[in-house]
Each structure stands twice: as C-alpha cells, then as structure tokens.
Image (tube, rainbow, N blue to C red; front, side):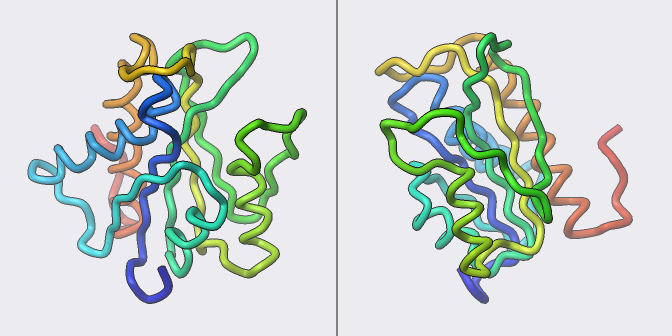
Length: 168
C-alpha cells in the first residue's frame, strides 16, 4: 500500500463463517454510510481473510490502519467490543495453534520485523458466538456492527483532523 493511501480500514474474517464475518459487515456498513458521512478522501476500505501477507500488503505505507476482526473469548459476551491501539505494544502470542495458520498477532509481529507496520494500528475485536458454516451474524454481534462502524468513523475523523471531537 506504500504511497497509495494514508488510511486503511480492513475487515478481517470469513463472511461464510457466521460471526467471523463481522469485519466484513463493518466494512460494508462503512461503504453504505459513506454518502451520509464521507470518509477522509485518502481512505481505502478492504476485506481480507486474515492471511498475514495480504494484511501487510493492505496496510503497508498507511499512516493509520484500522482492523476489525472477530474475537473468540471463553467465556465470551457476543457483541462485546475491544479496542486495541498497537502503535508500540505487542500482541500476546496465541495460547494454541490454529488450524487457519497464522493470525492477526503473527501478522503484526511479522510486519514489525519487516518494518511494514502502519504508523498507527488500531484493532477493533468483536467477541463472537458462532463461527459455524453459514451466513449471517448472531444477534449480539449484528447489534455491534453499527457501534463499531461509528467508532471507526470517529477514529478516522480524529486521525484526519486531530482537533475533531468525539461524536455527540
């Protein structure tokens, strides 16, 4: 992404694994709302399956990258949102290996090692309830989509105009 966009919003997941598609749903919501509340002109909205190489390619060269992904907590509260600013911090290593290969944490650390992290990286992780095959989000996760989309819009506005205040 070097020299292509200064802001990248990336929805991570799989829209055919129910709640794992929350990142894609937030990006779709942002696209729908762009007419009402335009995003900064240098913003790219993208979706990704979470492959570290693709993630790094999407945020490479960005001043700000916002990643929206599903989180699996046990026990969890479907729809609970966590905001993580990863400008200088490190993600904890996963407690177990994944059948999906490398995840977001590994992508962040690989990008750090390759000097390919965006200047600011913010992750919105939404706790899910159902990652079985199929489409559609569980009720709690679906209810979080407008909240997360609004939070991302505010994040972009603050980045684009640091004097911009919070949504009233």
